[in-house]
Length: 588
Image (cartoon, rainbow, N blue to C red; front, top):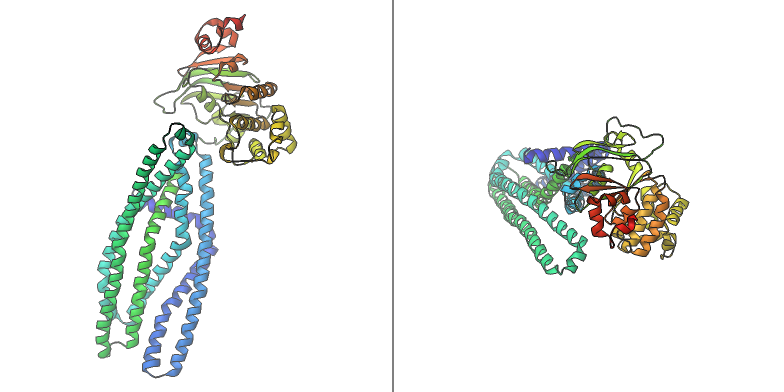
């Protein structure tokens, strides 16, 4: 698809979002047309005042012209105010709807999309690109419409007043059109680069802020500053390129305007002497020539804004065109009835890159209420199994079943109500502790929240905070310790009360005292609940009903902790490296 096709498609998409606002569009159009008409009639009034009032000596005509000119001035004020308000209202509604549409689209996209895309670039679509569109809708759009109508109306009136003087004036149009065409070509390319450079700046800033602890721990501030300097310099050069283009075009418009007035004065003056045109007509032509160049100057001044906005619009609608790789089935199976929580992997093969499988023909069954630990070396595929059980991805081949139903046949909402994940790092959102706990079950009562926290053993800890459950949590819970964040994250999952709970070693970030507290509460919560634990520490596996050993994407052992230690296979080797004492004391 060519660049022009992309522009056209983006414009059509935007128009589709606005079409249901047609009453406001009609009101805005009516206001703009009346404003334009009032502007264009003023030189005609001046012409009559000069020819009939001043030169003709008709005082009544002069008085009427004065009154009409005042009425037109008032009309310009009223209709410009109306057009400004209606177009701004329309633009802000469009921005509101577009933000919601883009954010909702993000929610629907698959995890594989977020694996590929940089989060800073996605944020840039919602910030820098949206700001570029806002600037145009608040200022540029109205300027473009009004200027285009004034320009068209001026040309028509000028030919109606004097076709001879109009033809002479046309000499300025070839260089004007050529210069405008060249400006459009070069500025369009330049502003596309500017949008990319702005995104690069935002990406680097976001990565730096997110990884500030690592930066300071390794003393890499100078490196980060040097790298940011290079990125910022590229952004500077991209913007300077647009300034350079504008600095050559805008003075050309000014010079052509002055040249056009000179032509009108010379030829108009000669034709006034020969009685071919009137003095009022020459005066009107000078005003109308300004009406030609003033809109063109205004258009040239906002053209960079329009190009920036169009580039932003293209990026936003290109992102909206990305289809989720995983979708709800057209005819989903119902999960009505008791949700037992039985999980089965049936010859599952999967790779984030289809050509490089991470899992190979993995098969196992987990009975309802069973507590299973996934163990293996780093990169063996443990976390991948957990992600597949949540249907963050679909297997390349094979099936994953929940209560004998293929996950691909279930609605995402139904699946996520049955299977809940507690990640290794407790992630909290901005808000209160209560809001974070309710995230997994918004309709829960205050009593439900407190009961879950009491079971988990964190009620007293929360009550001791300055505002208790109403204590504000900053971005990612930075005001809480790692252990406290994980406790709140666990409470969120327990309140949701899913039949299947997947934990990516949810206690690995807790201190011994907090871990003991959580383990005691979790032991009660494991009852009648299927639990899959991605175990990074083998103490977790010791207490599991069953241990699945993953090695290089394959299931190599399956059994109870003691049984696997006795086999002296892959698990025994892992346990022997981890355990402070030989395994025999545990088996005895």
